[in-house]
Image (tube, rainbow, N blue to C red; front, top):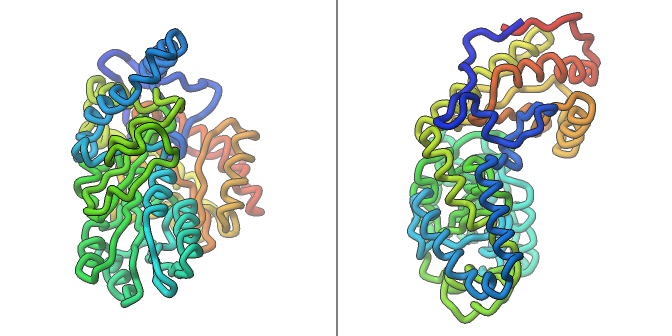
Length: 411
């Protein structure tokens, strides 16, 4: 049965069907844009042309790479509300966090505050920083359905005289909600505490993401929602001590100031950076970014309802999780009790279902409860979510020891 009330397949300016603009395998159902993104064919072709140019004349290409990266940075930074002179390209969000961690100096007994909704790799980096100096990492527990006021109050209660750094997500990866980072950073600044804002998911979903985030440092991935080639992110800062920030690779620009020293990184493939403006322009020219956010929200809401309805006959609690501060493109649907109770179990379920059903998914875990974190982009269609209900829900129920009905009705 076809889903009713679902937005019609999106049409772009140059494509009657948005899906035709992406080189996604039609044999796979793509419901996890949020993890690794998806690059439009036009952007893939532009990156391929840049790589070809580098291969045709390496001696022309690499000595001039800094000016090319600088030009791309100047076009990209305004997309997140930042100035080019405050922005540096880095391979991904974790690389940006590592750059900041490497610049910090702590003392024995100092504290770093992270949250229980933070991204694991970023938290691991904070733990490594703490070990270097004999500091400690303390976890601030945030209620999943807590209001912004409650979230800020948790940080206010957690701050102590020993706190030196807060690491907080602008959009949480496991729970897909927007956090009031600007208020948290302002509170921290009043206490003399610095704030690192993890905006990995924010570019494209939050207008002027870096400008509105607050904090001392912000970083965000451009290969997620802006659909740039993978390995493109920005680190943005106006801090007084940003000259202490260094690329992960020392190269011939090492004596330049921030951010220029980041524009040259030896012989890395910088085409990920150079093709990023084309990705941003692609969405704007084909559909418009504001309209894209509104459309992704409608797709995510409709898709979440289809999937939640598939689980409802077997659930002892409402599967659809109404977050207080949702983001345009991602939603949470609770799994049957006992499934995805840990990150490792959630990741294993993702890969098992991909192998068994041909559906790309994202499962997350928060406080022992597993969730399906659905992602929608302009190429998402009702049939994708119907496929999840038809192919994945029966297997999920079987894993939970629940006997599924003979057929699943899609609203």
